Length: 132
Image (cartoon, rainbow, N blue to C red; front, side, top):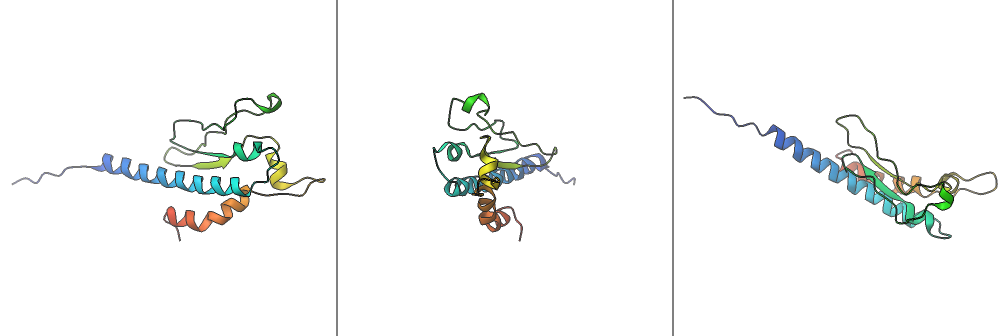
């Protein structure tokens, strides 16, 4: 009597990849939400430009405005790049002055929002992704 073995490996791999992608998305959204809460607001442009993206999304997420500031900003953040089997998520902004707000200048003190948002969520993200 021969035993038949069914291989569901491809289905399993897709399910695992989807679950990992969903967890990366959730992690990105946690950081994005807190970064928006922590961001200083003058006109609201910087806050509204904060968004996230992840590999495998098939899209470049765009911010909410239509017209670039003085033709220098784009309306999208970069698509994350990872190795073939990696799922990578990013949270950021395309507003050119964002780096000066985050790190400060000689004439302006720093008002960080991205790094503290990541730090605040580090424990939750580690749990979400199966770390300790």
